[in-house]
Every structure is written in C-alpha cells, then in structure tokens.
Amino acid sequence: MAGVPAFLPTAARMASRSALWGRPALRAFPAASGRRAGILPGRPRPGIARRAPPPRAAVAASKSEAVPSPAAAAAAAADTSGGTTALPGTIYLVATPIGNIADITARALSILDTVDVIAAEDTRRTGMLLSRLFPAAASGGRSRRQRLLSYHAHNTHARTPHLLALARGGQSVAVVSDAGTPGVSDPGAELVAAAVRSCVPVVPVPGACAAVAALVACGLDTSAWTFVGFLPTRRSERAKELGRLAAVSTTLVLYEAPHRVASTLAAMAEVPALRDRQLAVARELTKVHEEFRLFAGAGAAAEHYGACGKGVLKGEFVLVLGPPTGPGVGGRGPALELEERKARVMVEVLVSEGVPVSMAARAVAAAAGVSRRALYAHAVQVVKDTGGVQAAVGVSMEVEEDDRRHSLDV
Image 1 (cartoon, rainbow, N blue to C red):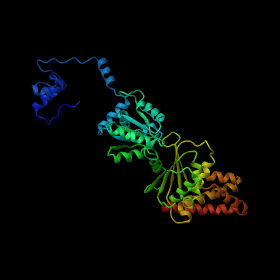
Image 2: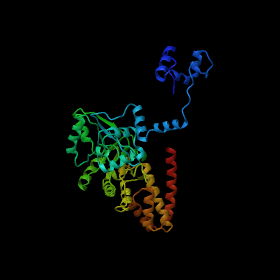
Image 3: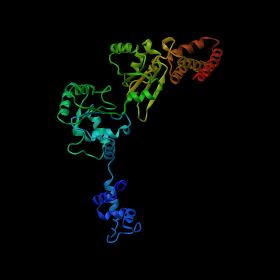
C-alpha cells in the first residue's frame, strides 16, 4: 500500500500516518522514520517495541475472506469506471448475450444485480440467464426471479403504463430481451417513447447486437446500411415490402426465423432488383456452430436452404443483402460475373469427366454460391454440344486470364 504523498509537509505526513495507522504503524516505513529519528533504517525506534507479525493461518484466512465473487468483482470494476449502480426512477435498456454468455458486460451485470424490477421478454429464459450470471448469489430482499415482470409484444400496451408508473415512483427498471439489445426488433421502443414524453430518464447499457455482428463479419459493404428487421409473415405484405426495399441502394440487414428463411429467400429471388445482389447469411452467431455463407444471389441461397428441409435449420438468421455492384444486367459487377464464369467452367469440366449433370450442377452451386438452375441449364447445353470438352478448355483458359487481370487491378 502506498504511503502518504511526498509533497505534503513533514508535519502533515506524520499527522496523516498517525491518524491512519496509529503511531506504532510507523514501523511500516522504517526508512522514513529512521531518517527522521536519526537512526539506521530498519532499526526500531527507542521506546517503541516492534509488533510481532500475525500468524500465517490468520493472514490466509483474512485473504480468503476478502476474495469477492465474480459478480461482485465485475460490479466493483464497473463502479470504479464511473458508478453503474442502478439509480432510482431510471429505465435501463440492458443488452444481453446473443449466444455466448461471456459477451455480457460488467456494467450490465451491475445493473441487473442492483435494479428493482427487470422487465423481460420471456421471464423463463431471463430467469435461466440470471441463474447462470449469478450462480451463488442472492440479492438482498427479494430474489432476482421475484423481480421479473413479463414485457413482450402481446402485453406491451398494458405493461408500458405500469412500468412507467414504477419509474415515476422511484424504482429502477431494467428492460431485457431474449437476446441482444431491447428495442431492436424486440419490445422496448414503446416504453422508451413514453418515458421520453414523461421526462423519465432512459439509460442504454450497450452490448451484443446480431445485426452489427453479422454486418461487420460478412464481407459486404458497411459504409452505408439499412436495418430492416423481420419482414411481414404474410406473403402479399412481404412481397410489397421487398418491392419497396428494391429501391434502397445501401446494404440491407434483415432478421428471419429458421422456418421462414427459405421462403423469404425465394421471395427475394422473384424481385429483379434484388435477385442478383450478393447475399450473406449468418446463423448461430457467437455460438459453437456459428456459420457465415456468401452467395452470388438470393436464388442460389434459396436453393441451398430450401434443400435442407423443414426442421433441420435451427437458430436465428441474419440476412445481409449487399448493394448493387455496378453496371450490367441486374446490377452485377465484374467480380460477380467472374465467379459465375468460373462456376460454369467447373460444371463443364465435371460433365466432361462423366459426372451426371444434376450432380455436377448441385455440387458446384453449393461450393460457389451461384444458382443451381442456371448451372444445370448450362451443363445440359454442354452435353448437347458435341464440342463441349474443347469449349470447356478454351473458356477455362480465358477465365484464368481474366482472374489474373482482376487480381492485378485489385
């Protein structure tokens, strides 16, 4: 432990040490006391006996008692960074992990530990999360599970005035969703709007967000993007919304459930302005089986996930639709056209080696992320053409030359 600052006068330092430690504690500073008493450093001062050191067992016991729990340590660390204990009459929007529980922040732990009420989208899932975050601790008074209130899409209108009244009455309220940040395609926006109108403080506690995680790791343009969220479930409304999004030239980020992802991708493929835009699909973000796939267009993605069958796909999906890539049919750029030409060459080579047409088209489409139907039609044409093998060799050399020029340009 550091001593009294050296810039204080000698008398002030002596007084501070005596007040903090008592006079015998000057033995903790033998060099300073020795110089002041005119004796050698480390030699006890006349008239004051040196205290015997405490037993080792007592020191070990005191150290073990002073070790805080992980939740308490996180809360203490958060407090030192500016004080994150829940304040009365405040509504907190607390982000929770989207898959990996280690993504919870120290500030979120402190708020969830000290808040009066926790408004959860699903009280069962949030209760299990709290049990994992605070395994051996029980907050004073009521337990954390007893502080849970349901707040979901079906009771938003009835629960919002109640939560607002609690905040006005001096209680602190934390709003959490099943995963991610509340208010982003989850309940919370209506409560925030009502709180702002009523001058009730609203404090965000940022954390994990599936849209941002998928966007930054998919490899598409991030300079300008539009968050869409979930599309309408009805087919007519979904088609109308996709038609509106076709006019948006920025990167689009959408959420979709596993049982609807194939139909949503098929609906995208039916919109000419969206059909040929590059598409990234992210699934099971931050989990063990996290997956990213990049497709040349929505049609190839629809064929891939449509072949998986119902009940096979699990986890929430994030669809990132890239912007139009430049001039050409459907806005396809040179890089995308080059990938499609490579895929056609691969199909030609496989067919020339005796691989069945359907098998060749399916394998290349899955590997290259292009439309299987287009590759199948091209393979059939190669089989009908008597010079298919020679044509394949010629196109292969041409594609290799274009690939070399493209790499030099980059």
